[in-house]
Image (tube, rainbow over all chains, first blue to last red; front, top):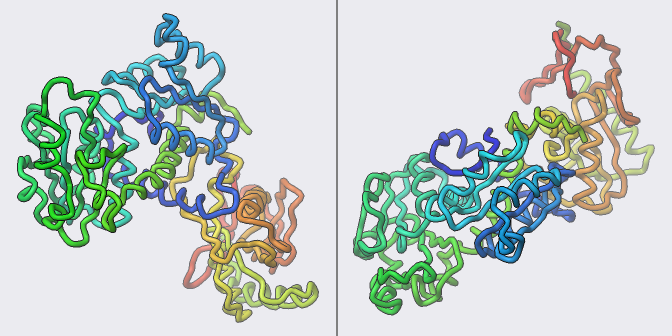
Length: 316
Length: 173
C-alpha cells in the first residue's frame, strides 16, 4: 500500500476495493462502548490546514483519535505563516517534533505532493484537498456510500451536477468511478462551469437537468463555490437554482430508488432545495458518518506502507 | 506432517467444557470465536453443547502488538459482538494457544465493548511457546512441539488439524 495518499489517479481497482473493504471493518468501531482501537497508538498526526474546513478537518481528527493517534491541528491562517515563515520552514519545524503524518489542505493545486517531496522517509502525507486538483478521501467516502447502497458499480449511472470547473471533489469522483468501472458518468452544468476538455475524463456532458438526470441511480450535487464566483460564471444564484437546483420535481427524472449525495457544505436554495436535502433519498449525513471510517482506513493503510514500517523500527 | 483427529478433539473439548461450566455454575454463556479458526471451533462447540446464543466474532487485527512491524493485515474483517458483553459470561474460543499474544489482543478488544462478568479461554490445542502469563481454562490437548513445527487448522467443513514443518519460526499463532 501507498505511503502517501495524494490522488485517486494512478490507483488500481484492487487498491480502491482494498480501501473500501478496510473501511467496512472500521465501521464496526462505532458500535462499541469505547469507540477507539489502539492501532496508531504513539503516532503523531498533524492536520495542516491552509484553508478553512470544518467537516474534513474534524472527521480527519476523529479518525486519527479513534485510531489512538495524537493529533495536532495547525491552522496556518492564524499561525507563524502570517509572521513570514515559509511553508517548508513550518514543515521542517513540525517534522522536528517527531511527527509521523501530515494531512494537508491547501488552496494551491499540487501542494500536498510538493510537501510529500520534502518530508522524511517515514512520514506520510495525505491530501485533504488541494486547489482544483484533487480531494481523494472525499471521493473514497463517496464511493463507500455508493457501494453501501448499490453493490455493483458496473450497473450504475451517476450524474454529477453543478460547479465542475472549481471542484476538486468532482475530479476525484470521476477518476474513482472510472477505475471502479461505473457504467455511465454524466456531468450536468452550464458551459461556464465546465472545464475545457471535460469529455476526455470519460464523462458525458449535459446542459439540461431533465435529460441528464433521466434514470440515473446516483445524483451527486456540488456546492456552488460562492467564494470563487467573482468571474461572472452565472447570471445569479436565483437563476442557477431555476436551471440546475435539485428540487423534488427534478429528482423524479432519476430512478425511484436513486440516492442524492452532496460533499457539503450545502447551500440550501442555491444548488439543492431543503425538501431534497432533508428528504428520504438524501444520504448526505451518511456521507459524513462514513467519512470517519474511510479516513481511519486510509490513515492506517498509509502507516502500513513498507517505508513507514522499516524507517523507524519503533516497536511499541 | 502429522494429522490430529479434529473431530475427536472437538468432542473431548465439548465434554470438558460442559464439566467446566457446571463446576463454575455458568449457564447459557456467550461464545466469542477469534477469526478464523476460533470461529469454526466456537460454532462446533455451540452445536455440540446446544447453545442457542448468537455467536460473537472477533477480528483482533486492530489490537495486534506487531502493527509497527507488519502494518494492517490485508484480510481484516469486522468484529461483531451482537449481544454486547456487559455482565455476560464469555467463552473465548481459539483453535491454538501458542504465544498468548492473540488472546491478549482479544481480551483488550472485548473490554472495549463493555464489562463482562467473566471470560474463560477455551482452545482445541495448547502448545508450548507461551510468551505471556495466559493459560487456557479448557484445552482438548496439550502438545510439545519443536520451534520449527506449526499447527494448522483448516475448515470449516471438515475441520482438519495438522502439524506442519516450517522453515522459519512463525511470528504469530
